[in-house]
Length: 465
View 1 (cartoon, rainbow, N blue to C red):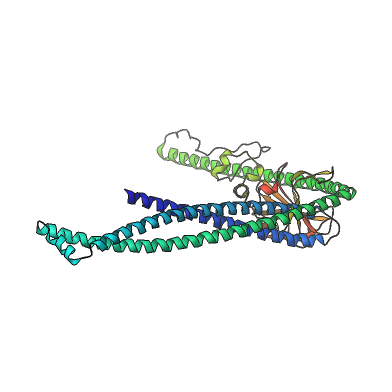
View 2 (view 1 turned 45 degrees about the vertical axis):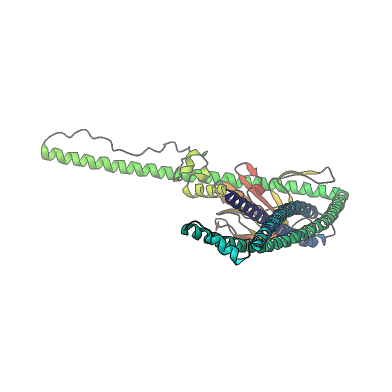
C-alpha cells in the first residue's frame, strides 16, 4: 500500500513538473514573438519618424508599441510566477528527499550495527544448525542471504538519493538565476515603456498643435469616403441587376426547354395513339399529361433562384448574387474564413480604425467605412480571398480596385498602379497593385469589406497579426 502511494506521488510530481515546463516553453515562445513584433514596430516607426510632420501613423505605431510592451510585461510576470512555482515545488522535493535520505542512513546504520554484533562465523553457523528441521535451516539461510542483499540495496538507495538530491539542487540554482534574469528584464521593459508613453505624449501634443491641418485632412477624407461609398453602391447595384437578369434569362430558357420537351412528349403520345387506333380499330384512351418537375414561375419580373446545389443554401436569405453555384460557393468560402483572411499587405499598421474615430488631444472626429493602413510606398497590395475584379476606377485621384466574392465585396483604395482588369479571376495573394503615397508622405491603403448596403469591420475578418 505504501509502495503504491509513493508511486502515485512520484507520477503526480512528474506530471506537474512536465506541465509547468510546457507552460514555461509557451510563455517563452510568446516572449520571443512579442519582442520580434516590438523590433519590427521600432523599425517601421524610425522610418516614419523621418518625416518631420507628426502623423496619425506615428501615434498608431507608438500605441502599438505600448500595447505590445505591456503584453510582454504581463508575459514576464507570468514567467516569474511560473519560476516561483518551480522553486517552491523543487524546494519541497529537496526537503522531502533530505528527510528520506536521513531515514535511509539511519536504517543502514542500524543494520551495520546489527551485522557487527553478529559478525562471528560461529554465531552464523549456530543460528543455522539450531534449526529444528532441514526446511527451517533452509529458510534461515535464505533469510541471512536476503538480509545481506537488503543492506546492499540500502547502500545503493542512499547513493541514488544523494545523486538526485544534487540534481534537484542544481535545478533550484538555475531557477533562481532565471528568476533574477526575468526580474531584470522586467525592469528594463518598464523603463522603455515609460519612454514610449512619453513619446506618445509628445506625438499627441504635436497633433494637437496641428489641429487645423488635421481638420482639413479629415474633411478631405470625408469627401473621398462619400465618393467611394457612392461608387461602391453603384457597383453593387449593377452586379445585383446583372445577377437578376441572368437568373431571369436562365429561368426563361429552362421554361422554354420544359415546354419543348412537353410538346415533343405530347406529339409522340398522339402519334402512338393514332398508330394504335389505325391498327386496332378502337378509339385511343385519353392522353395523360406527362409528369414534369416543379414548374418555374412564369412571372419574368421575379428573380429565380437557379443552379444552387449547396445544402447550406436552404437556410440562407435569398440574394441574387448567390443564385448560381459559383456565387454561393464564393460567399460561403468568404464567410467560413472570417477571422482567418490574410492581410492585404505583408507589412503595415492600422492608423484609422473602422467606424467613428477621434484624434487624441483634440475634439476632432471622423468616420471610416473601412480601415486605413500605413505601409511603405510601393508595397504590394494583395487580394484576401477568391473572387473576381468587378471594378477598376479612379476616385479623387486614387486608383481603386473592387473585388466581388459572391455577395461580399472587398475594396482596395489609394493604389499608385493596378495590375488587374475587370472580369479577372483572383486568388488570395494575387497582387492587385501597389500602395500610393498618403497625405503625410508614407504609403496608405484604405481597405473595406462590404455586403449590399452594409460595411463590416475588416479587422474582424482578417487573421490576427
